[in-house]
Length: 502
Ligand SMILES: [Zn+2]
Image 1 (cartoon, rainbow, N blue to C red):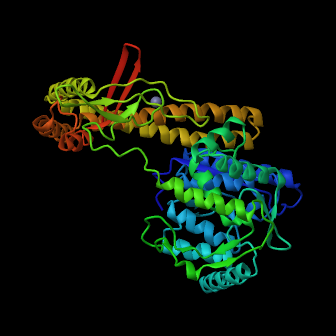
Image 2 (image 1 turned 30 degrees about the vertical axis):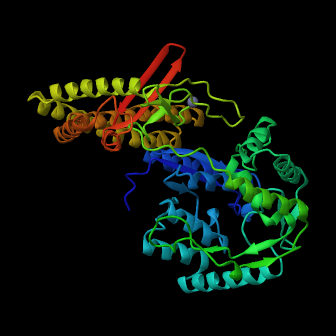
Image 3 (image 1 turned 90 degrees about the horizontal axis):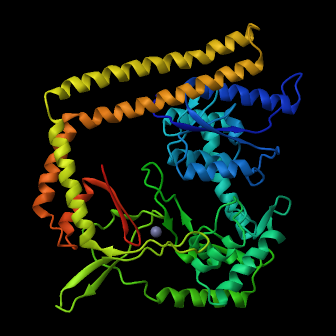
């Protein structure tokens, strides 16, 4: 198992069976310390997720939901727990292990590291959580059949209850959550009042209404809420199978034919009336048909030009001149933040930006050419020595954690002193790791191969780049091989253009 590409990890903690002679709190504290020591000894960055409650059920584990959201967003390369069963056990763990697999997240415990993408590790996970692989497959099959059966009875089997509802474990059905259901009604009302999904999102954010995880409402979330028949009391199961990501080991996401869905109406209390819901569906279809702003073609800076104020992509407009020719403008930004406030960045003629890009490319070419000297080998060797030195220092610092711990165990320092020492080592370690990353980047930069390649690309670009042609597809392709992004910011006559090379 190689842990070399682990950068950031999540420590997950919740109460487990007490250890002898310790209270719940003490046990948790001990586990926390053990895991923090573990990740620090490896030099990993970390966030801690600690449940307050004791529930096994994901729905009542808010920290775990937060953690899963972050995992889906690609924040972490590993989850660290005191033992496998702390993350999950039983049927739920099926889903969780698959999510980890999709995101290439490994599980680290003090005793063992598990990589769900490694077949033998996966068998181990299955064995530890279910007893054996056979049992795992049996449970999986039974679970699917059981889910279908439950769905036919109008029970909720689709995971965490949708916003507006809570899952009742006794009836296995959904029941209304008053605090959240008001938001659902508000969303439906605003939509029928003529507001768009975007506008509804802004309105909720302005009112300080957030999703269950404390996130801002996005128009896509509003769209899903407006289309979800759960809000008229229906349960729909089996719309799709497989998962929607590109990992080759899992089935691709497929939507099943509607005739194969299991749909039960009046399965639980409705939040929205059927008439209102149907009217919303009718309007969703109608409003969908209004063509969105006609898609402009490819411009020379398409996909590269970003707003310097808000980071959004900037829109282009063609304008016809008296001569009959077209001129392309970068339009003012107008991008809206989550509250609906418009970005105020102004626009400019695109050829103005292209001229600047041309100058920057020339400057960059000169810089690369002047770097190609005999001195380059010397520079590379110097940086390599620096990298080696840094690696050694980092290894020593990792060892320092153990030494500090030993001092504490031997009574040479107290707990406060130990924590202070560890904190200071951690800060130094962060700084050294940063230096190491910078040195590696520097090494790549002076490396002849990459310079040579870049110079070739520049030469090719120059064949096709004409700052007076704002709609060159070829120049756009070549620019993308050379440039990471171009940011543009304008306040009156104050103009700022920044070209970032790859
Ligand atoms: Zn902007």
